[in-house]
Length: 427
Image (tube, rainbow, N blue to C red; front, side):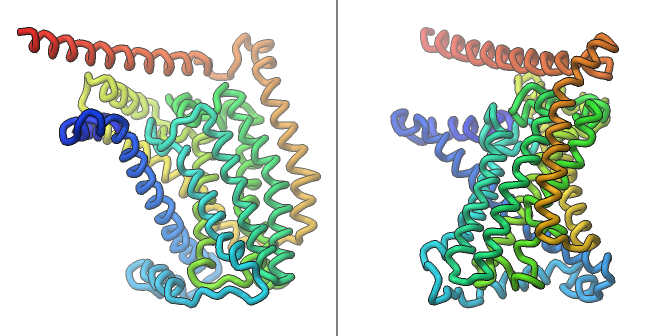
């Protein structure tokens, strides 16, 4: 029944209508669906840091020949992360006497909430998103930028000059790197003509050549600039000057202990997955495999299931495969970020800021300008807007036309059921 309903709200609507009076059932399914979506996202938010912390231990152990991470922790080392989590929960939650208690205790939650909220508009497959928003990219970038408030609060409220220095460093770094991050993210948006992440992912169906990273030379370069800037915005080495042990002891979280200390790193690893997920959707095809026959078959299965003309289970399994492809792409991005941390030396804070303001911002602006002029150049030279034979506008129009046809067929089927019910009541 849930497969046939296509959405959690649709599935719950039938249950509420059967077990509750009509006055109580109206709208209750949407409340319950929101709760279920929140629970699922909390599990995704909590599970990704656990997996990536385990991965970080393994990668660091292999790259730097550390015997501990390669041998400790039971089967594949996953028990080590579990033991660390139990240890952090049991540790005493300390608050320095000179600290502002309210701000000090609430700062880690601000960091986690900002990272968690970004998952609400991040589609994991075609239609698998908690909140469908036409301005999804704008919302997710705005939400991720709120993390800086928690970091400033942590540094300011700790009553330690080292924490304050670390907080100010991180605030300057994050605010600065948000500029090229947003500009590079707009390069594929120019090609797609939409801020809806679901639509952007759907437009890249049909082969690797349709991925936006290969749309034009400017988008190809923008992907790598975006990845560097996203690594810096997540406070990852070699850009982790806010918590440089040689200079600031522990940075903005020097005075934190136990579970609150772990919240900062939970938010960091979740943000790593979020920015890599955005890169996957904007540049790397999202949930599309890049194999035209397979992508076309999955697309047809989803549409047939949505219109009620095909198997609902097959459509569900097609979305499961799409989610697996998306998570794999995002996880590979996180793996590269971990790889860079254990390979490159840490930069100085002045070098970090110089790299952003003197190089990355002008480069991202140049890429944005080039992406806007590329369709004009292609139209002048090749009489079409893209180098591929199929224009992007044709693919977008086909997606919109197919969605409208599915909606029309569903409306006709519902109307036929209503007419049949009415006729039976008259008889």
